Amino acid sequence: MIPVILSGGSGTRLWPLSRGQHPKQFLPLVSAKTMIQETLLRLDGIGGLNAPIAVCNENHRFMMAEQLWEIGIKPAAIILEPVGKNTAPAVAMAALSANSPDDVLLVLPADHVIADIYAFQAAALAARDLAKQGFLVTFGIVPDCPETGYGYIKRGEQPHGDAYNVAAFVEKPDLATATAYLQSGDYFWNSGMFAFTAGSFLAELEKFNPEMLAACRLALTAANTDLDFVRLDKELFSRCPADSIDYAVMEKTDKAVVIPLDAGWSDVGSWSALWDVAEKDADGNAIKGDVLTIDCHNSFIHAEHRLVSVIGIDDLIVVETGDAVMIAPKNRGQEVKDIVAQLKQQKRSEADVHRKMYRPWGHYDLVDTGNRHQTKRIVVKPGARLSLQKHHHRAEHWVVVKGTALVTKGDEKLLLSENESTFIPLGVVHCLENPGVIPLEIVEVQSGSYLGEDDIIRYNDQYGRL
Image (cartoon, rainbow, N blue to C red; front, side, top):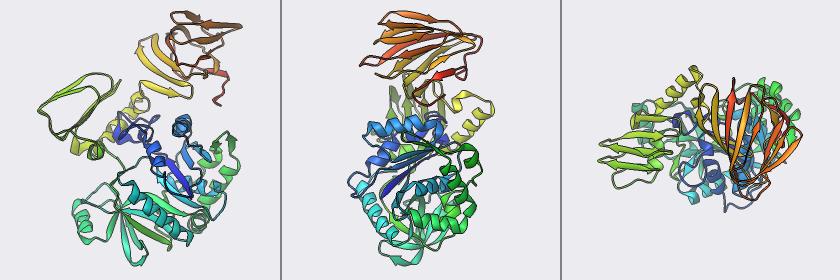
């Protein structure tokens, strides 16, 4: 069985923690591990697993690779989508990349929480057996409340061991309808998790959406392979129809079955959902960071950079990051996505990026910015280096505060230690490298008429960002 990790979501309802360039699946929201890491680690103990296939946005490739490396997993492939086309093309790419049509794919979104790992693993093994018989299996979450934020799956009358025929997929209901679904016992929440053989899925996709399958085949055939990365051809993949796996295949096929899953599942799609699965104090508050409370109850309070003090609040969400604060009633958490829409409409960077930005060589924190200057704290991992580059509109001052820096500046090579500095004039080709065994930390002060990240001309880059 091959785990297929789908990592295409943007997590807009968990802003300001989740951003377009660093969405929720790459964040440690529930434990010390990120959600992607937890998704793979909960498979530990299932026998017969092959290396996973991950499908993600091209802009997230280095975060994906590094987070898999951190937990000791080498993927069979990381398929990079140049544009988002929903889940059906992503799964098709994974199926086309399998070693054999008989390989069972266990398709898992990267941003779910599952409390009962043993129940999940038992359901995955049952799904594997059904998939080998030619069924397309989905996992239906046994509901514990009349949830209006999920789609539902209605079970049929004919059981297949642990599974039932799928009678229908239904859209997100209103409260009265959701209550009726809960009382009937015939409906499950649609989890978005699946299991089937690569051949079975591709055969059904060929039957119901041959145009999509043809576009996926062309884009994959023309893809470039770079280490573990499979870079899909952008022009060809852009022609692929966009659709979810539910609409493209599962609602149309007569081979769909559903396995009931009661395992403490959540897709953590909102702040209230995150509060539901978080540890809470005696007053029902989920607190993370430097927080002081007086007479507060059933609230979610998250502080990243500053002391946050709250008095006399109930059922609120309070989230502080380095560049944003968000406060909302807990029952209106779904509306956070509307704030993100406003940010995008105003072309504000806070919709997509944090003050702290991750790169394959390390990260930087934007400490201060002004009209013609900005200051960054840059951390370079041992043995890593930035690209050989130059800028047309800015000069840079570098001060080493920890570790050792190997600096290329034009034809010069400089070895700088703590408290030493150098100046990179505008237009000079330069490179920063950490030759040491501890992280290199520098303070960079930029000055010039334009300080955008797109003012970079790269001449050489070990991460393929030319």
